Amino acid sequence: MKQDMIVILDLGSHENTVLARAIRDLGVYSEIYPHDITAQELKALPNVKGVIINGGPNNVIDGVEIDVLPEIYEAGFPVMAAGHDKACCAVKLPQFGGDVEAIKAAVKSFVFETCKAEANWNMKNFVADQIELVRRQVGDRKVLLALSGGVDSSVVAALLLKAIGDKLVCVHVNHGLMRKGESEDVVEVFRNQLNANLIYVDATDRFLGKLEGVADPEQKRKIIGGEFIRVFEEEARKLDGIDFLGQGTIYPDIVESGTKTAKMVKSHHNVGGLPEDLQFELVEPLRQLFKDEVRACGLELGLPYDMVYRQPFPGPGLGVRCLGAITRDRLEAVRESDAILREEFKLAGLDKKVWQYFTIVPDFKSVGVRDNARSYDWPVIIRAVNTVDAMTATIETIDWPILQKITDRILKEVKNVNRVCYDMSPKPSATIEWE
Ligand code: XMP
Image 1 (spheres, rainbow, N blue to C red):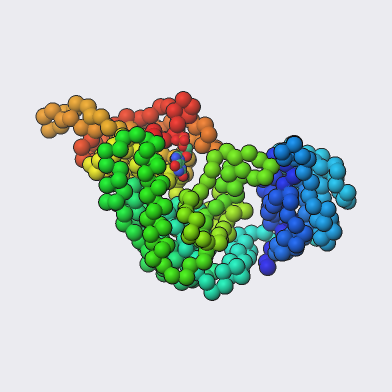
Image 2: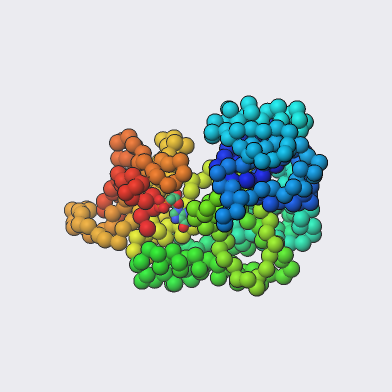
C-alpha cells in the first residue's frame, strides 16, 4: 500500500470529521471507524500507523457509557485519547473545539513522531491503494453499478473500471427526466471513451407513463424512486454471476444516515432498497472521502471537468421542476430553458460561483402577445442559489444584462413559453427545489 493511515475511533465526538480532515491536511490519510471495532478488524486495515480514540458528549448509547474494546490497546499500535480521560494510554488531549489549526498542532507530534507516519496522502496514492483493495475484495468476480451520471457514481465507475475492467457492469437508467445531453454524455464518456461495459436503458416512456396525470409532488417522487429500483432490478436479474454492488457512498452520506454515536439526519440510499433476494456484497471505495476529495479523485482518474464539477441534481431530476402533472411539452420547456441557463452561466463565469441554478416550469399559463397575436403559454422561472450544506440557502444576485440575455434566449428558443421570472426566495421560507 502506498499511504500510511491514522485510524480515528468514534467515541461520541462531534469532531471526528474535523479531526480526519486535519490529519489529511497534515498529509496523512485518516479514516473514521466505530468505537467497537475489534483488534482483528483494526489489524486487517491497510497500513495503520496509529489510533486516535476521539471521545465526546455522545458517548452514551441506550443509557450505557461506551468505550473501545480493551484489546485495542494491545493491538500493537500507538494510541492517543482525545477528549476521553478514561483511557489508559500515553497521550491525553482535551476536546479540540473545532479549530483545524489547533487540532493539527495538537496531533502533529503524535502522528509524525509517535506513529512515524509519512505524509504520503495524495489522490494518486489514494487511487492506487483503492484499486489494490478493490482487486483484493472482488477477485475475478463481477460488480454491478447503477451509474446515474452524478459525481459520486461517475467517480466510482471510473475507479472500478481501472481496478477490474470489464468485470464491472454499469447500468444507466435514463428516466426521461435527465438534463439535456446528460445521458448522452454518460454513454459517450463511459462506453465510447473509457470502454466500460455499459447497459443503457431508455425508460423514458415507462416513467412518463407511470407519472401521467400525477400532480402530487410526494407521489411523483415515490413513483420515480420506486420505478427506478424496479428497472434496475430487472436489469440485474438479466445478468449472470454478479456478486457485488458498487455504490458511490461518500463520507457525508454515512454521517447523515447516522453513525453509532450520531443521530440520523436523513436516510441515504444510493440505489434505494433493493429487494432482499438480490443479495450483493457492497463495494464502496469512496466511503471515506469528502465531496471535494471525490471531485479531486475524479480528476485524477481522468474524468472530464464538467462531469466532476457537475452541480447537484436531485434523483427525481427535472420531474420536480416540471410542476404538477408532467407533460412532454412542459418537460421539454424545462429541459431547453435549463440548457440555455447553464450555457449562459458558463459564459458569464457564474457556473463556478453559484452553487445550484436551474429553471422551473409551473402548470399554469398566462396571456402574452407574439407576432401581433394573443398567446397563452407557460412561464419559465429561474432559480440560482448559494448554500454551504443545502439546509439553508440565499439567492444569487445576477447582473441584469445576464438575466436579460437569458430571458431573450428562452423567449426566442423555447417553445410554448411567453414569460420569464426570477425566484427571489431564500431557504427558508422556500426550499431550493419547488417540489
Ligand atoms: P430542497 O429542495 O430540499 O433541496 O431545499 C436541497 C438540495 O437537495 C437536492 N434534492 C435532492 N437530491 N434526491 C437528491 O439526491 C432528491 O430526491 C432530492 N430532492 C432535493 C436539491 O436539488 C438541493 O440541492
